[in-house]
Image (cartoon, rainbow, N blue to C red; front, side, top):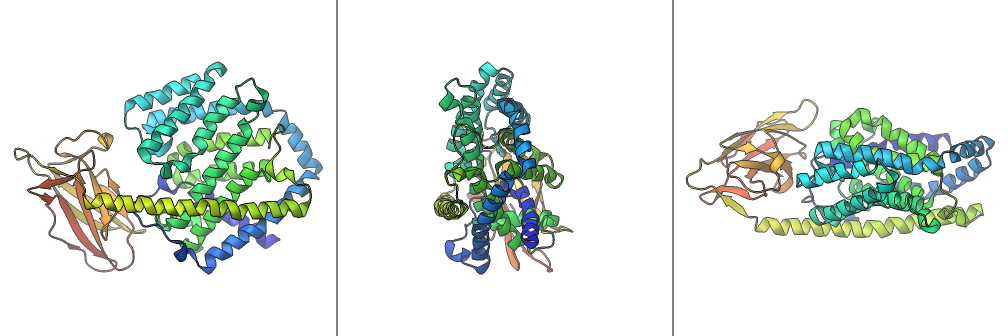
Length: 464
């Protein structure tokens, strides 16, 4: 029992990795792992451990229900249940103002394409000042989420199902109809639970994203092998999301998750605060309101211990399969689409009267891990604030390739990259604001180098 509790506590910090995209140079050009590649003893061992741990969770839940201290604590927190909507209004107001200040929409890594949407979020924050206009904020959040689906793609935005769920919570909690009003909590539990479950799969199918983050913050692994720690994080995160959905260990679980989110700020700083503030709000609502009383929590449909245990284990397996297969399918399709676009990637020919930009890549070994690349350019300016907007000769950003695969965009003269063992070819291509490749006389403006750990760096002859 003590060993199991130690394992659970050791893996809980994995929540620091809930959104790897915030801290890694992720790219959907990457090839996701296949189910055949996941067919390992480690994967199945952790999967079975997750399933067999659920009856223990059911037992702890029933044990807590018989505890006088637990019952009195629930009665104390129930006194503040009516403050749930206020908590959500305050936290969402903070989230919207941070997004307004940071020129992002929905999530830290999604840059606003227009100042219209930035100020739209400011207006939504103002609507939260008054209970009567809170519904407008809820509707606005759902609108922003749908807009981001069109710009970022459904696959990316499924990470943030909690965002429209919070919007629906703000709407439902301010309705007068009792049946609709009490849908607020089930929607919030389901939305946050689904987001945690879905995000867990990026650590399984795109392990290289998470491994690049762990290379920068190795203390997170507590000495465990990075690949084992990462996939363990995935199963812990999926399990916690699932427990939220079925409302098992509701209040204790919410307290544990929100405390862990607070502690991870020391590793990742302000970006994590911006991204997780909304989750803190939802978790605080769970703490003061519990599972709710109008609609019965899924785990409560069965009274007997063995039926609850069977319900928890069987539905865990079903949900894992229902989400894993479409995740892998969508990831594979996005990779194929990305490769198809590369075959006929548009170019931007430098006008004859304009000076031709040049680029040279100079690598420096990072003392901790990987390489720092210094991009020296002439007749060129990095303009991250104009990404996705109209093209202006001599400005834009760059695309970074490792061994022929695009691994990310570069918006300044320095970029950090983690390379696989052995020789790697690193190429940087200058692009316009709208992602067209710069070219002069039909030749791409790029620089390519070859790097091998422990060897000299050779610079190729493609630096125009």
